[in-house]
Image 1 (cartoon, rainbow, N blue to C red):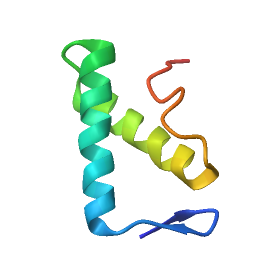
Image 2 (image 1 turned 120 degrees about the vertical axis):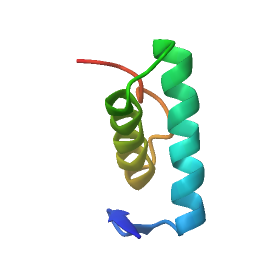
Image 3 (image 1 turned 90 degrees about the horizontal axis):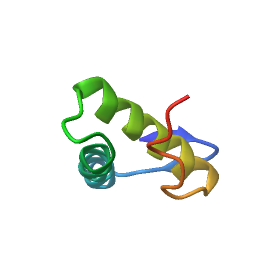
Image 4 (image 1 turned 90 degrees about the vertical axis):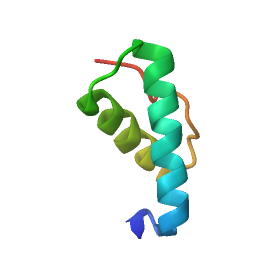
Length: 61
């Protein structure tokens, strides 16, 4: 799947990233909602596309 900025992730990579998003959301929010997890996942996708890594993925604004 093309996630932007010319970066493509396989289905397996997307699955791993979602599992990591779930882990980060649980670490940051205790009992996260699906919206928390999806928000962290979206941020991880953006960060992956632009080389930022996981930094700031659980920061809420």
